[in-house]
Image (cartoon, rainbow, N blue to C red):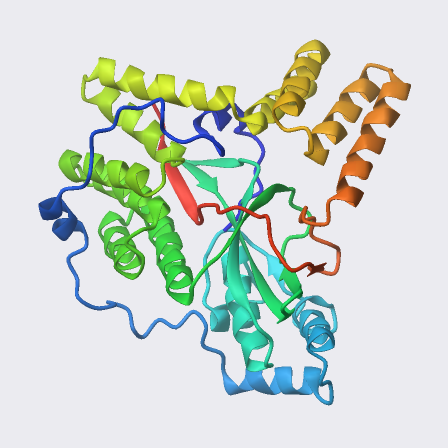
Length: 394
C-alpha cells in the first residue's frame, strides 16, 4: 500500500534503509509468555476472506481477453490492457481502503495491494506465473490524527523462463529505490492484507477490531516486522504498555532495520519517563541517518522547496557521496542547478542520471504500460520489508 502524500518530509529522520542496529544494545530474545498472549490462535480466524478469489464473470473476461494467444508475454500484455485501458476495467488508484480482488473489480479502484490481488488472481487463472513483490519506495508519510503512517509499496512479478521475468506495477509514476525487492509467499501476502485492514480500522478508532485483524496477520506470518510494529501501536492505543514494548521489540528483533519500531520505542520510553533509554534510541536513529542517502535526498528536496539552494546542493551531494549510482539524486541536483541559473551543470547532472539508468538494467523503473521485462539470469535486488507501518507523534 502506497500513499502519495509529500507534506511530511520532515519526519524522514525516522527512516533508515541500510544499516543494522549495531548502534543499539538491545538485550531481547522474546518472551514466550507474552508471545502466546499476542499470537493466541490456532487457526486463521477469517477463512471466509479470500483476497485472491475471482468470480466466473472475471474469469470469462480473462478468457475473452487472452483467447487464441499461446505466448505468455502477449497474454500478459492483453491482461494488463484489460485491467487498465479505458475500453477495459480502467482501474484507478485510490489509497484509502485495501480491497480483495473481487472488491476491486466491483469498485474499479483500489490501492496497490488491492489491485495486485486482482492482477495476481487473473494472471494465474490465465496461466501466467505471478507473485506479490514488495519494493521500498523513498519514504513518504501521512499524518492521520495522532498517527503517522509510513507506506510501502507492493507490485507483482513472475517468470517467463529461467532468464526472463517481468515486473508489473499499478503506479508507474512512483520513484523506486534500487535493489530493494523481495518476493512474498501467498501466506505473507495474505498477512499483509490483514495488517493493512487492521491499520485502517485503527485509523478509524476501532482498536479492538484492529487488534483481532493484526493478530491474524501475525498468525499467518509471525516473522513480519511490520505487523509487530503495528500491533505495538494498537496495544499502545489500548493502554497496554507491557505488550506495546514487547511488540515494538519483536519488530526490531525480526528486522533490525525496523526504524519505525525503534522510533516508537524511543517515544514509548519518553512517555514513560525513561529518558536515558529514549535518548539511546534517538541516538541510534541519528546514526542511521548519517549513512542513509535518502535522508539527505529528502532534506535536499525540502531545502529546494524553501529556495535554500546552498543547503539543497550540500544535502544532495552528500546523498551522492553515499550512493553514487542513484539516478534521482542527479535529477534533483539538476533541478537545483537550474534554479540557480547554472544551466551547464544542470544539463550535466541530467545526462549523468540518464547514463546511470541506461547502464543498469537491474534498476527498476516502472514504465507507462505498467510492465517491465527483465532479461537476466540473476537478480541483485536485496530484500525489503513490506506493508504499512505506524509511528506515534511525540
